[in-house]
Image (cartoon, rainbow, N blue to C red; front, top):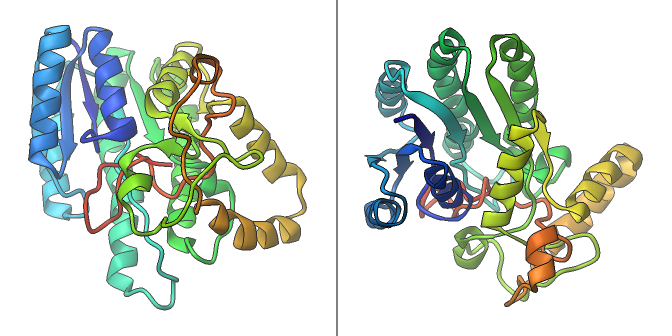
Length: 302
C-alpha cells in the first residue's frame, strides 16, 4: 500500500492531513513529540480506515535524528506523500531572544523540510509520481517585529517550495505551498503567546483544520502549486500585494500582532465550515498549527 509521511501529526493541521490521507487509503508515517497523541492517532486511523501507522518520536531540530529519518525516507519506494507540517512560534524579539532559539526555528521551519524533500524527491522522480506539501503561513507575506524569525523562516520556505515545484513538475511530482492563516488548533489554545479574547475581526477569520486540509488536497489534485484556503485569506493575500510596503509594514507591526489576541468562535455554522467564509485563518504564527516551542513541534500552523 502507498504510504504518506506527515510531520507534526500530533494535532491540528498535521493530524487532519493524517486523517484525510488515511481516508484515501494510504498507510502513514507520522512524527511528533507527544507519544500519547501519536498512539491515539494510530489507534483511531486503524479503527476508522484500516491503515497502518508508523510512529516516529522525533525532534526535528536535532540534526542527527533528522538525518537518520531522512535516510529512512530515502529508502522508502512506497512513499507517495510528504507533508512538511511541523512548526512552532515564539513571541520574543530578535535581539532579546537567544540566537540558539533562532537556529532552532531555522532547523524546524527550513532545514527539516528541505532535508526531507531532498531525501524523497529522487524516489518520487524515479517513480514519476508523488507529492510534497510544505505548510507555511500567510504571516510569511508580512514583516513583523514581534515574530521576525517566524515570518522570515516561512518566507524562505515559500521561495524554496515554488522553486522546487518548477524543478519537479516535469517529472510528475507535485509540490504545493500551503498558506493558511488563523486555524483552530492547540497552537492558539495552549500557547502563552496569545492571551486574551479572540474573535473574527474584519478579514482575520478562523478556519477549522479539517477544512484547511480538505482545500489543500483539493488544490493539489487540481495541480495548483499555491493553496490559500478560504475567501478572506485570499483577500488578505491580495492586499499584501496591493498595499505599499511601508504602509503594510506599519499595519502588520501595529495591527497584525494585536489580531492574534482574539478568541476563535466557539461554534462554526455549516455554511462557514463548508465555504471557509467567516472561519478562515489569518496569518497565524505557527503552523503550521501546532503549539509553542517549549511544548511541541507539531506544526498545526499558521
